[in-house]
Image 1 (cartoon, helix red, strand yellow):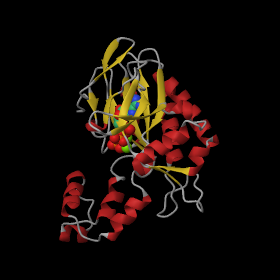
Image 2: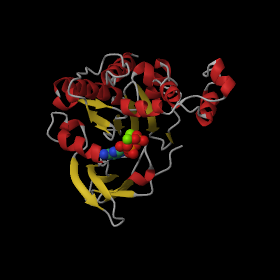
Image 3: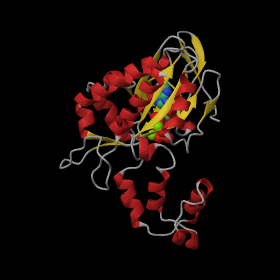
Length: 291
Ligand code: ATP
Ligand code: MG
Ligand code: MG
């Protein structure tokens, strides 16, 4: 169960509780202007937002309104609050891509060959059969082994996205999707999420198709590896929309490398599987609408 973030947003003179489905709670605050929020500054993310404001993807990301320094002395990014136009919004965060760590992070993990007992413990808690005989004997796994395995317990490695959190119309919210893995499980979760609004699924599908068409033409998308980035789904009784968020781990692709976001990832090729995830999302929403 997700905790409500401890702040209220004021918009059109109404106060509404802000909903945060992922990340550390301390990373977000209410913004100084109406309809904005503050996210703790990550320079990489700011670089991306500045580029995105000039890219054709601009309509699909929260508007970036510059840096703000708070009383705590910390710097924040001021962003459009994507929830502010909705009444009692239902919100879902889907993390896109076939992996959620950077190649650089994997390389760093590979330098340390120490066996990790804590990671072994986490592994057997989820799947006692996951470790090899050797790993069982030593009661430890290496960090890179754990990182790669972790993407296989959800739909990340197979479908190219996973559900990170959902807040439904009845007010209940959940982050309990760590092992939601199969297409059927995901389909059920999407059905449940859109069950309170008859045309939400159709509108979501339209928006996904729009995002895909724009990505094909985007210079930003062509030149960046999007890791740990999400699509944020938001609907109420009247409307439904989706935005691309979270660019803290979005980095430019090395100059000598080209990626198409659709090819299988192999260490070193920098493929993120963003379009694998998006295509699967589209296919699942298409099947939902047919039912
Ligand atoms: P993590 O890396 O763990 O995913 P993070 O600290 O990078 O988290 P984000 O993923 O950017 O944070 O955002 C966390 C959550 O906050 C999102 O799932 C969403 O619910 C909410 N959120 C983020 N940005 C916005 C926005 N512009 N408008 C409305 N809600 C937002
Ligand atoms: Mg995120
Ligand atoms: Mg993040």
